[in-house]
Length: 134
Image (cartoon, rainbow, N blue to C red; front, side):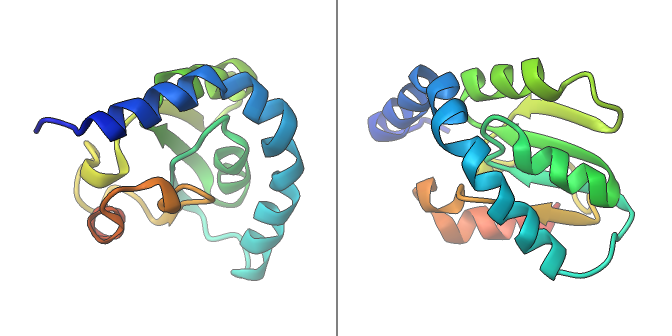
């Protein structure tokens, strides 16, 4: 499937600001993300997927609650940043993937999170359907 020039441009833009975004915003926002996950209830165990993982903070928070989490982002530079920061942690992995057409198998995850990522999807309904599928 061919991507629109706008989506390619957005991916490239996130690629240019991966480190700056992490340093300026992501480290500040993780407190809110972790609090939101805490409100969902006790640790659930199993395998988590963090869609639109950016620099990986939410992926780490999900892994702390599930035991294992895969963070995916459509910007390779974000995945590189996440891997540099957190890739050596047990139960945490990162990959390039697109929320609107996840390459993950059906029913492969027990928990799916998407912190600040859905608003960047061009087709949010399809992204939610993909998250439900996996």
